Image 1 (cartoon, protein in one colour):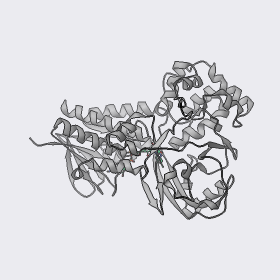
Image 2 (cartoon, protein in one colour):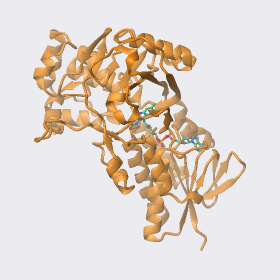
Image 3 (spheres, protein in one colour):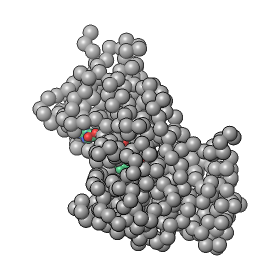
Length: 466
Ligand code: FAD
């Protein structure tokens, strides 16, 4: 009997995870399926890209994986990488508000206070702002049953000041988005659930967040990476996937439905026959792949934002006035173009040779997208100028590595989940066996992408075995 082929489009973390779990299931259950993973570029890993220079380990894209979300750790264990996991250094972090660095109050989660004492002592919010924020403890639950913006939800619970000075810089940073447009249910549904269950986010977080270790009194770093950088997970996945199933430098141009299955048209002129497909590319490419289906056009209207990641290597002696911490995020009411800055040498000491410093900043607020297209020199100069408002860096960097991520951050705006559900329903009806997944769908974080890759495998197998 001829084997059926499952084509995975895109070799980022979602596609690689899908290929890994699919081939594992095929081996273990002796299933009559072949897998082809098609990647447009000349490398695998998508946004996960580790770059090495002069003893530095530089992440051009994501720098770590949150440990709290199970699918990431589960995959790491599957791949035998558990002993290589390195947790982040947990120093003081800051928020820059109206040009001044403020310590992140102890016990805050995503800017939401869990401990009242440190919150009251913090200079981040005025006394009136604090009183307003603490109304969260007694304020009635929201009555919204459908989606709402993350900003509206947080503003209702805590008032504008805490949101703008503390919550917004942290939450919107993750998505490079605008908190007042982002969907609560697609980004932080747990906040909604905590409100509904405990009547207050402060109370809910207090009840549900991990406590400091009894023996050390320390909460372990919430994120992990590997001594050789995040690409370790990509390399290990690739090692565990059949090499013959991987096609590099082959963009999928179009997918055509046939009487039985699909034809997948590649940029090099080849055609793959598929019984089922897992599509993991950024959403903007999907309308082109399925141009004959009007319902896919919705993706052209789903926004994505751009950012640039600026890594700068220095001699430690160049930093005359340092801060005692691991980094800061910038509130939107500050006159800065950087949005966040990490002292990578403190947060991830293994990335930096002794005596050196590695500082990583982001530029590209939703209302400052043009900065991403400036020249390297212009971006470096903007970043140094901003840094020197609070630090004293006397020398040019030994080198900088600037990575521009155009339209790389999918925006989950209000109604995202309903939109996705409608598209999936249409796809199930019109192109059965095609599964759309990845960072444009149910979570941008690496563990979310891993979970989606794993779930797509279950979907494909149940479709083919039906
Ligand atoms: P991608 O990585 O985008 O992979 C999609 C792949 O599809 C690409 O390789 C692309 O070349 C390929 N492709 C596109 N079109 C075609 C085509 N027509 N045919 C074939 N192949 C095609 N997450 C975290 O958890 N932690 C972080 O610290 C973090 N920081 C981030 C920092 C930045 C700058 C960015 C941009 C993202 C960050 N994220 C972070 C998010 C996370 O990195 C991404 O959401 C995740 O890596 C996306 O994986 P993916 O496989 O869904 O998509």
